[in-house]
Amino acid sequence: MHGTVQGAQESTEAPLHVVAVDAMGHASTTDLLDGTESRLETLGVPTALASDGRYVFASTLDGLSIIDSGMWSWAHGDHFHYYRAAPRSVGTLQGGAQATVTGSALSTAGGTGVFFRDTGKAVLLDNAELAEGRLKSVFEVDAGVHKGLVAPLGDGALVTVAGDNGTSSAVQFIGASGQPVPGTETECEDASGSANTPAGLVIGCAGGALVATVDEASGGAPHYQRISYPKGTKAEDRAERFGGRKGRTSVAAVAGNHGAWVLDVREGTWRRILADVPLLKVSAVDDKEGHVLAVDTSGRIHVQKLNSNDRPDVSKPLLAKSLEDQESLAGVELVTDQQRAYVNDPAAGTVHEIAFADGARIARKIDTAAKPVFMAVTGR
Image 1 (cartoon, one colour):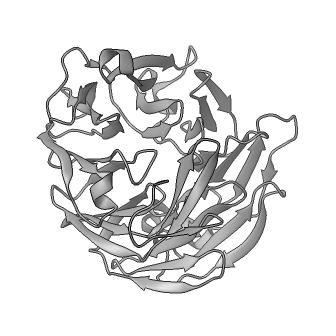
Image 2 (image 1 turned 90 degrees about the vertical axis):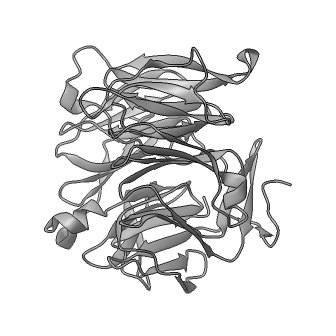
Image 3 (image 1 turned 45 degrees about the vertical axis):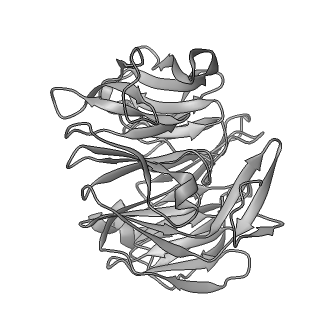
């Protein structure tokens, strides 16, 4: 119960770990509570990394390699339960070399969506099976080659419909049977970016955000709400990737070269934050202060309080070596939690822990066993 599985131990606090993966696929994990380091199984040569807060998904030429970090949090009403287990490799999902991954709210229930852009293969993995160390799909369908995604919802997922120009024209709900549910297709041109929040599943479309929730009165079919961009928003300023603290109702995204968007999913509103230089990554914490964090193109950390008139806190530049190398820059990640944020510096081989509520203070540098060319934070 409470999201546990056999062999896991309950913890009194979130078992946060930094997972680092180097350019050859060597992986390690660092316990952020006591500093203990462990080597993980070697993955294939990675081109991208994603995580839902427990599993680490590495895109490789052989497919999507998956590691269970053994660390996760389970939301239970107004509180959380925390679990620790031994990390293990789950295996490699075949289907292509360019995977887009969308997780569910819970790592032990629901599904994880995987879309292989280079082959058009759309897969919904069974999270209960993943938790047992097994790769088993709820469904696998051919959605056509395009820039698409699979976003878990209820007992199925929203899957993009290929358009005429290599992007999507719509999304449709595919149930656990692997069949599209009639009447659930809705327009979503050029779908890009998705996030699961307590207020609904968010998918970025050309005209704004599509928010989907499960309509129990209709037998679990999706109910859609559209949150359009403010009038006058340019195509190049649209949100393409959402970042936020897991389990919160606000997400943020880079707004082209002109700051960031903050989407309040519960309120159905966009808010624009301007910055003096372009931003690389952005994430919403969604606490009472309304913290929004960003990494800019000069390697500085910006901390904005939406619920305050204070000026943003800005750190000194942190990523000088990575900013000089495009391959290193592609692996920079920003992860936010309740009190800390984490940014990897692939070229320098370190991870910065940021006390964002304390003037963007750099709390410590974490040297990982594997060089953090790619990074995830698990136990969230």
